[in-house]
Length: 264
Ligand SMILES: [Zn+2]
Image (tube, rainbow, N blue to C red; front, top):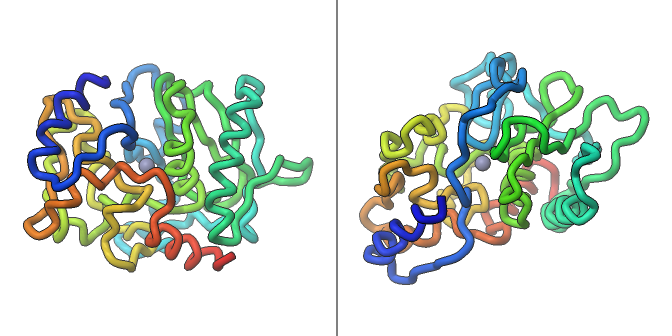
């Protein structure tokens, strides 16, 4: 719903020193219809990433260890593409993965015959949605990365979702987010759960709160009524037009991924 952004941008600009138009994440409000895949019934959905319910046994703890999904072994993500995924989009996917790989010891490569833990990149599940499962999983196996809408296939969405693949959660769902932003999840209607505050800790997001993170939503993402969902607290007003508009990995993103997989 691009009209939503047109409505919101003037509001955003009133309170911002600079007004960044253009790229934002997530770009559109997804529908929740046609959710017919099995994962939907067994996982907890945070909008564009999912944690399998069986992996939340330690909910309430902090950091990556808080759930039993693991980091990818040696930072390598074996990838299997559904036959529907075009060569151009496969190239886009690898390019985004390389951006993460430039700063940390992570990489993506074609799934080999004996890779039992791998990422299945498809566009066949939950129409008009972009989402992925978080991390490498608790016990290996196939991890699903669903880019079913055409608007998913851009460098920003890929960078963001690959962050989830590698194990990062949302910056704006950090346990300490209320210090920096005021959140009005009721403005997101049935997507309000996308703004749940996670007691899990955002993959051990122990650095400073990062409005520049590729893992931060823009302040009106999923709004159903034209009202903002995230408003910076006093002292942080200038970040209103910065959150959710990252196009590259922030210093904070780089530090966090290096903490998990090691610096390149
Ligand atoms: Zn996300």
